[in-house]
Image (cartoon, rainbow over all chains, first blue to last red; front, side):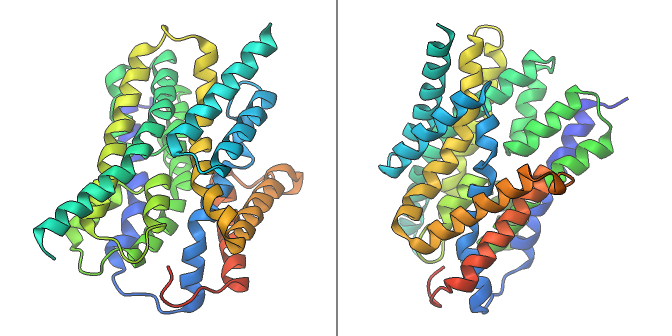
Length: 102
Length: 238
């Protein structure tokens, strides 16, 4: 019988471990130009691979998710803030699904 | 460093964290809404957000709890989804001022999320501990408050709006990557490569044995390696 509270504790532990190990242990600067460049590009690579293609399945239907993605891409291209892009995408999905239901 | 610049570092971080906190609200709202609608108590749902502070990992873990999965499956699934934090923590170890003490590192590490990592690594030069403390404080409470709101609103909200909010997390990622990608050709190349690798692994049946967590890691490693190979950065840029 799985007790939720124990499962939550285990989840918290395996979420914290990968976060803490490198930053707690590594204090020296990495001098390799290749690794430094790799680390420079990493945030963009990780966010892009988290987003695509999962964003297309983040709502109840793929068509509305694609419409929301398009809204987010457009707003982000025009340098809108994080909040505006997030709310704009939600609104786009909501409107698309409402119109679709009519 | 004197007190005035310590304070302004914290303020600077705090204000850069505010948009992240606001963006977290619809995402954590969805989480709270989902967990309580499926039978988890409100306090436990909020506890998950306050102790895990992660989106995809806790969504997956909670779904498994609700499905009655065993400890091993819950632990391994959550861990695999979260391995990417190791890469972020490694990158931040190079970004954080070397003088930051271990005690601070242990606390700061807890606040590493996809968004706080992205925002801090896009800062110029090194970052101070004050900056990072400021950066993570608003998102932490935004995540907890959004979860609480969603958990208690379960049943009040129209179902369609709940469904539409699932996109918010990904929209935030898009907001973080598109402006730099539009300005820098190397960044754009890395982004497109990551999307391509991720989609290939996701859609080609041959790779169907690769889980979501490992797909993200492989696409990240591949795309960032490609970027480092073709667009090596100058020494002082990071």
